[in-house]
Image 1 (cartoon, helix red, strand yellow):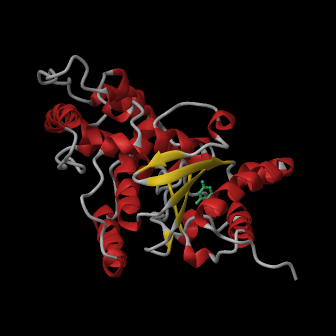
Image 2 (spheres, protein in one colour; image 1 turned 90 degrees about the vertical axis):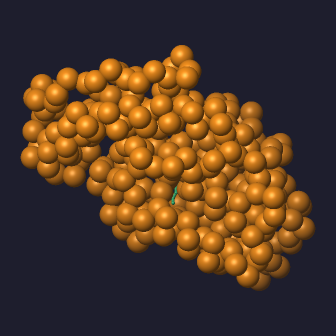
Image 3 (cartoon, helix red, strand yellow; image 1 turned 90 degrees about the horizontal axis):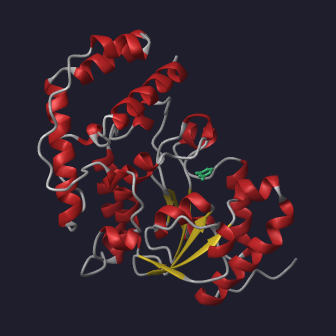
Length: 308
Ligand code: URA
């Protein structure tokens, strides 16, 4: 049933997207970042469109169709006609959640870091704000637990993956499945304990069937990851795989072209390496990943543990 509902919701999202409405589930929320006037205006217009849509009872029809398992075209026929979208300050109010914006461009860095002693509470406040999130379609796609993040609030090193898998969805913790075991080994090989680093993902809810998160899902969720990074203020971020690299850096480039060089993200140096799940599928690339991690170790002046 959740799979069917998820499929139906996706169909509805596509339906609204075809209408040029990408932001309808963020209605009524204040702009989280507050520092991007252009983006705010864009979201504002989209939010207004969403409120108008809501008034036209389309969203309740959507919920009812999901609850009842009715097929989308039939539900679409029952939906009342859409009102005209409000005038937008920009030619196309839609692209805010589908275009790539690097984490650096999304908001200025906070003027002062959160004091180390207050970081755990600051992270808890972000988690509380996320609540039982329904800001994007992943909330309706069979999610069990929201995977916020894990590790030290004062970590010097942060790993960012793509999104939770089945094990993470069940436990509410990132990287606890097979890929997580490999990540644990990678961390240990760097001379660190898992509890010393911070681990999070681009999206906090499991995409159905472990598919790659949609831009609208990743961009909606990014505001919270951005704030987690700003609270933890790691010296180095490691993007695990291309989804993390693409959204953190705001570039759609191949992993191989991004590896082996330093990038920047929210005041941290950022390195790109292979996703542990990819390394499980192609262990020959582990040597390459180790080169990436050695670059990180040199930056953080870490020494690998002595061999026993
Ligand atoms: N893969 C990810 O990208 N993140 C997880 O948390 C688990 C698997």
